[in-house]
Amino acid sequence: KAGVTQTPRYLIKTRGQQVTLSCSPISGHRSVSWYQQTPGQGLQFLFEYFSETQRNKGNFPGRFSGRQFSNSRSEMNVSTLELGDSALYLCASSSLSSAGSYNEQFFGPGTRLTVL
Amino acid sequence: AQSVTQPDIHITVSEGASLELRCNYSYGATPYLFWYVQSPGQGLQLLLKYFSGDTLVQGIKGFEAEFKRSQSSFNLRKPSVHWSDAAEYFCAVGYNDMRFGAGTRLTVKP
Image 1 (cartoon, rainbow over the protein chains, first blue to last red):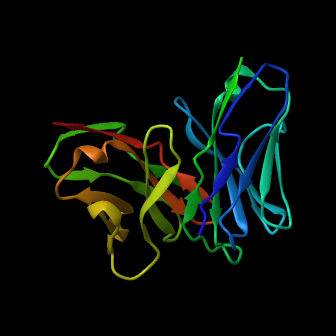
Image 2: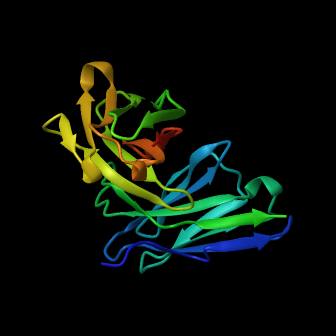
């Protein structure tokens, strides 16, 4: 079974631009979560989607948004990029089957975003 | 407030020595508990998980963890560390959402 894939793997943008990252979960997984990882803040939860609906959201500004498609693939978008958005963005999928029950998450390799 | 704490930011052990990485959580009920490992530039890989039952959980790569309800802890152990174990280790808790500790970086001395 193929793992979680993320595209692109590396991205360089300039301040003020916007970016879209893509995540394809493991086949059959309906839950997709996004995380931002930086040396200073560690691993921070952005949001989680389940069956095309946002189930949970972390404490990030509205510039960070996401969506999930009917095939469970997910995208996250960051608008008006700031230098502090430079980070490794990780996507994880889970076979979560109902609200409140958490199975383990399987992570993709991440997208390394650099904002200049 | 719900939280996951990994008290040790960085640990150095000699190859062949035993290892224990600490994790404490603060939740109203017993959540699902996980340990992940991350090698540089990579995503996170699940080492082991605890949902219920036997409090001593075996994982991959020779790791094990023990759930202690009275101490709200889920410490990760390995009897003999290999140089390839050098990585960052994250404890995670799944309740209404998934929360990760700050991570413990493991350095292995030859």
